[in-house]
Image 1 (spheres, rainbow, N blue to C red):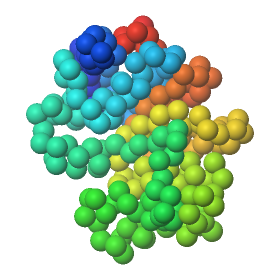
Image 2 (image 1 turned 45 degrees about the vertical axis):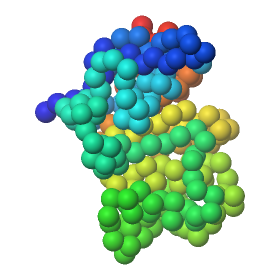
Image 3 (image 1 turned 90 degrees about the vertical axis):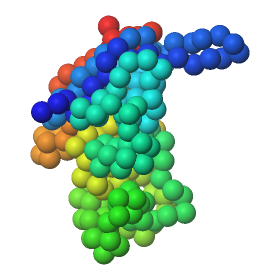
Amino acid sequence: MPPVIELRDVWKTYRMSGVEVHALRGLSLTVEQGEFLSLRGPSGSGKSTAMHLIGCLDLPSRGKVLLKGKDIAQLPESSLARIRGKTIGFVFQQFNLIPTLSALDNVCLPMLFQGVSREKREQRGRSLLERMSLSDRLRHLPAELSGGQLQRVAIARALANDPEVILADEPTGNLDSATGKSVLELIGNLHREDGKTIILVTHDQEIARYAKREEYILDGRLR
């Protein structure tokens, strides 16, 4: 079985004011199914660029990104979006919930894009929010929820299509320490109890230690 995600000698280069800026410089990384990996690095290290490539949200300038053995650069965008939507669930620092949709509708949205019927979407959405202890917040808008509740809605949304991989980008960045710890424990449970592959992107060494394996990125390379 191929790794769930593999980066092979990946470079990402941007041209800014006529100057080439290398955000990634030959990054190679393999993530096996069922791993709990943290990718840690300071601001400007390339970890955000790496996250976008690991999540198949961007294409490399050089090198290859393989999603379950398939080179994402060779896939039509429609096929890539479908595979990515079923394989990877995203949790972001800014939550990225749609403000005009209820908690339940936010969780159901990824399933809509995968063609799941409305009845099944709502059934799974309710179940996921109940698991997050949010059964009394189904119809609340994001503006009516606390930071911890918003992140739990975001985690439920990430689980909507039952992905193999959860990619969490600074998931505690907008939370107080106690709430952040509860969110990290919840993410850890997804690894221990559900067997999810977890990729945790962070600048914080203490948070990175929640993972079973830690990689450090600096100047666009693993150190």
